[in-house]
Image 1 (cartoon, rainbow over the protein chains, first blue to last red):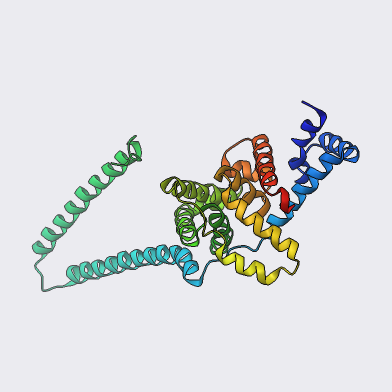
Image 2: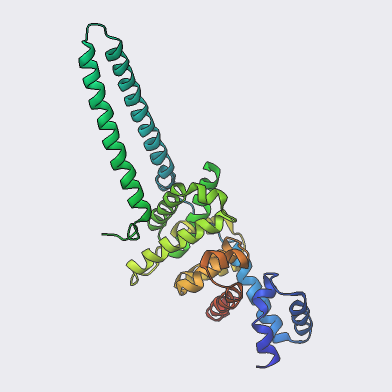
Length: 145
Length: 159
């Protein structure tokens, strides 16, 4: 490899200020003496400044709102879920309270309903825990089916 | 996070237009990238370099799209930019070089094009580019140099 070939391979790193001090000095010295490498370097400089000063393509308003719409959609979906779950929890809570404090309902009816509700929670909870455990340990969960 | 997403959108769109040559496809790719960033916002916030994280994802989205339509060319590239260039540039020689650069950049191999866009258009450091492309920093220098030399050879008359 000739001196010029060796230096030429370093010209981009030199242009970008990404060379070690030692390599930078070698290129400096060579460029002082070699018109052909100096010309190559100047051409690379023109390419870099030309690319850097090209006007950036800009999205239309429609494209911009489509791209940023991702955030809005996902946020509103999250808020929607939160409101739905919160609202449902509030309604259920109020219903339970009304049911428990309603003196016109027989105590045994209340106990029976309570037992069914607790049983449903226990069964549902155990299934949920099992599913979550399976999901954590499933080695194929990321495989598309 | 909103500010970060806006920055990703602005910078990502420029990169994607240069890579895909079409503003609509670019907007789709950026939309996918932003969606991934929002879904993994905790990871993005705690990332050493969130911009590199986003560009890595976006670059993969662009590569997927390029593979899907590997035969289509990028003629539409810079349509919108052309107009702005001719409005803003007063010097005829510079305008001519900018035009030649745009045309030749769109014809480059995507592997070389992404190097030039990340470095000379986006202004990323070699370390950031290495992070985005998951390649060693030494490879960044050699690949970028090959890209510039290819462009130089094709632009000889205009330089």
